[in-house]
Length: 236
Ligand code: SAM
Image 1 (cartoon, rainbow, N blue to C red):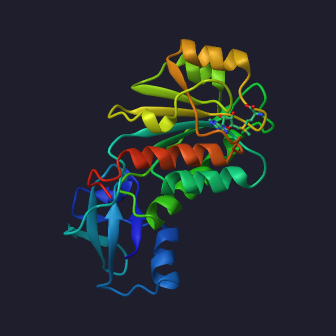
Image 2 (spheres, rainbow, N blue to C red):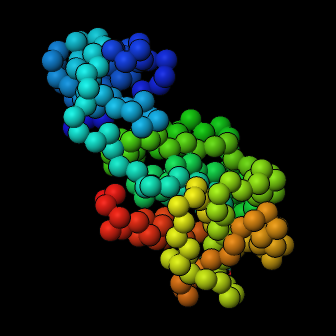
């Protein structure tokens, strides 16, 4: 079933939606939609409808099935941006694994300086991934920021920082029902000062096992393990 996340301004109440020229092209030319064909329309905040195509717009009807699949807690992933294509790959996978918000970080040892000009492209990657993997909520990517600025905002709910070395409990043992923020570092790791600053800001160091994972692997392992906290709770 085709799924489309639409902008708030595209909804006329809960009865119909307008479509952008790109969306119309996609439905008419790529998917060969004809009047009467339908898809799932999502508002990005957890509501969904059956959208019946009339050739120009989508008429909204109540949806019988689940609007999509979400983890039972919100998970903000704040991570250093890895080199090359790995960041965009990471964005896609983080959405598949349930992240609700992604913060591109610049840290002391970051190899890459994330560019705010890429934000629209990154958000499009999130939208496509969320449509493909049947998310109910459209995850958001924020404008890049330094770790210092991020920490200055304070942590809402529980904060965990993945550190590759030292004595730390496994992330697997840290199950919570609070909103969660996970920090993950760059190729060269967080500096000792950064880890200390994160701890002062309320983050607890956690391990993802003994092996040193690459900067793009660690956040994805963290998200998979967070998903494992809720396995068997009936959400999957
Ligand atoms: N040489 C770096 C160091 O010793 O910190 C390795 C950095 S690692 C390639 C990139 C990031 O992934 C780390 O900063 C950390 O956030 C995360 N990471 C990698 N392996 C980890 C592990 N086993 N446990 C927890 N976090 C890990």
